[in-house]
Each structure stands twice: as C-alpha cells, then as structure tokens.
Image (cartoon, rainbow, N blue to C red; front, side, top):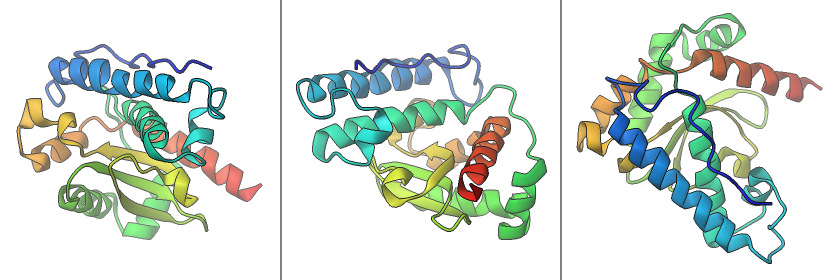
Length: 199
C-alpha cells in the first residue's frame, strides 16, 4: 500500500484571512507531504507495508509511528476546517453544554489548553474510553487512537501551523481557528462515534 497526500477539501486560499494560502502551501504541500513520503519509505518491506494509517498508529513505534500519526493527524485537521465555518447545533451542542456548561466556556477551555501546550503538538476534543467528552493535549505526533480515545476536533499547535501568518502569537492563531471550525464535520464524527460506542 502506498499512502498518498490527500487533497485539501477547499481551495488553497479558501481559509483567508484566518489562514493564508502561503501557510497552506507550506503546511499541506510540504510538511504534510513530507510525512507521507517518509512513511512510505519507512514501511517498505516491513510488516506495516500494507496496513492503514490507524493500524500503523496503534502498533508501530519510532519513525514509522511518528510519520503515520502526523500523516493522519494532518488529514483530520484539514477536515476540521472550513471556509464556511458554521454553527454548532444538535446532539453535540447538547453534549458540550452538559459537559462544559456552554459553547463559549468550551471554546475558552480548549483555547487555554492549546495556548498552554508547551512545544509542538495537538489539542483535541475527544470521546474518552467511557464515552465522555474531554479536551486533551498531546505532544509531537501522539494520537488519540493510542489512548483508546475517539477524535472529534483538533487544532494543530506546531509552529509551522501558524508562524507564517501569526509569527510567535499562537494565541492569535487559536482565536482565528474558531472562525473556520467545520462544525458539520465535527458533529458527524460525534454521531458516528456515539453509534459505535452504543453498539
């Protein structure tokens, strides 16, 4: 199996002014592509050669794990963004309100976690092992799958995600992130995950 760089689900300039075309050119076209290329080189002739990204993430270590997880995390991150933005509603809105008391409070807590993350990594909204919503911060290429969690939403807090547009102001990037969250996609992840956990 040869893993391929997924196309962005929108035009390169579609997320402006929040994320620039230049950032997407580098972040998707160079960083994400490099993870894919390094992974394909690393799995040749190994037990991982014909496995999916999720299968690799849950069983590999070292460079194979790092590149597979970064490939998957980035593909998921692109889906979490949309030029249309959108409003959260329905079952996920109710679940977030029960857990965090309001959407605004959830966004503040998520932002605080993302801004407070030391070094490179990802901030996630997940369903944990018992089906409860949780905000988690993970370093480098770590992934919720390795901890029995189901990812719903992620914000990439590696510097390459925001340095072109916001320099060292991660807070400005995280504030902009909320303007382009694809709530339709996040809600669908919650719906599918809830069905799987109830089965």
